[in-house]
Amino acid sequence: MQQKIIILDFGSQTTQLIGRRVRELDTFCEIMPYNKFPKDDESVIGVILSGSPYSVHDKEAFKVDLSQFIGRIPVLGICYGAQYISYSNGGKVEAADSREYGRACLEQFDKEDPLFKGFVDKSQVWMSHGDTITAIPEDYKCIASTANVKFAAYASTKQPVWAVQFHPEVFHSLQGTQLLKNFVVDICGSRQDWSADSFVETTVKELKEQLGDDKVILGLSGGVDSSVAAVLLNKAIGKNLTCIFVDHGMLRKNEFRDVMEDYKCLGLNVIGVDASEKFFADLAGVTDPEKKRKIIGRDFVEVFNAEAKKQTGAKWLAQGTIYPDRIESLNITGKVIKSHHNVGGLPKEMNLQLCEPLKWLFKDEVRRVGRSMAMPEHLITRHPFPGPGLAVRILGDITPEKVRILQDADDIYIRGLRDYKVRLSGEDARRVLAAGVPADMQNGEIEVSLYDQIWQAGTVLLSTVRSVGVMGDERTYEHPVALRAVTSTDAMTADWAHLPYDFMAKVSNEIINKVRGVNRVCYDISSKPPATIEWE
Image 1 (tube, rainbow, N blue to C red):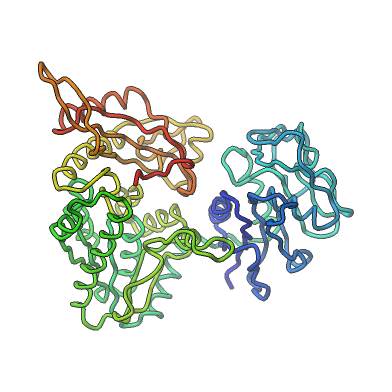
Image 2: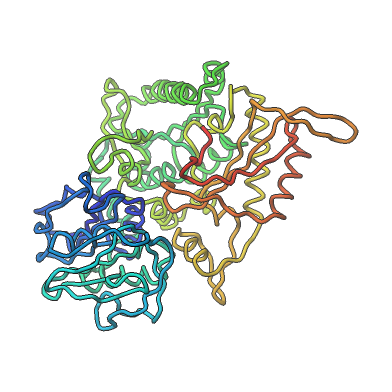
């Protein structure tokens, strides 16, 4: 029986990050709404309660019956989870004199408590709370304090219950991974048998049993998720897999050709469909971002359906849906808050069953699975790319000439990011390594490209704007482009990447000198929130 940790989600922005940290400990976990604890699942070896945007005193605050698991299996409360455990058992949670956000230091901690095994003195942790615990319940004891928070961590003296008011899942908590390992491995008893290799072995076996001799259709995008799903399915069913790669004309420069060649080298059966004329015709004159997305989505389904219907005898539609896609599509009340392009299927008349071999994986795990199957590194490390492609990076209407301008500018930018090397240490190095980027640590530092350091990068064409410039002795009146690069762990939140000035100067000069139609380069320094990663 596969062991699992259940993470009950109370609405925190870092809930997915808790899940990723547990998976990095080679332990399977599931993120579930706070009120959906699986009572009869004997494979559950521990429970983690997440943070929340609410105070425990709010009328809207999410509440759970703790008796479902306290006393039965080990429990760890984080931030709101810690406050809720105290509040529910007779402790006190009150508004703090001043809200505590950011770095703090554990001035003292119980070195004998198993939760803090291996901790060093004065360990840095990350706080993010407005309320604070001012009294803990009877039969509980304080096990850690900061200068401003007496009950930074506490534990039951009678049951396997621990709680921390800081966030061990974030990189700023320097020994957060050690704390989670102490809980998951030492306290809960994880066998640590969840790995990329074991996932491939188990999933290939399950796919063979599930699909048998049935034929499967998979829509490829050129991205890491669909590519890894295709290779995984190919290992399981070989020639019974047919992949369809639709070119809507708004891919990156030479992407259709390059990706088709990559797939050929991987031994995949891929049908490439150049439908760019249809997409450009249907998008002519359309400027509203939502209308552009809907037209592209509609046309993609039409083109894909037409090609899929030629594959007689197909019974399954495979998709590269990953775990965050499914989590983001439902909030903790069960209401749809974001319709993801992979969460759904083809029209009912196609009568296909859905196959999602990556549905339990986070993005970094998908990359590890790709490496386990010896896929090319440039395919595995590709940045996320929007389904509508460059259409959502061109402000205003779409034309082949505007796409050409953006493709040329973006190609210079992305190649520059790949070529520019940087040395990282500390939190930055740990974040990059945790994302699965292959790099050797030497003297506490790693060397990686700027491309590998950031989560996503792209160029935006401000085609509704023209700016005055001078080239030689001539006045120009052309378009500006904006460069975008963000750092993130899951794309739920993102910060703008602080790219080196010499890099930006070099790329800016090259774009202006080589790309006809551009005479100005800007850099987007907006974070998410309040901005989004894409402009449209």
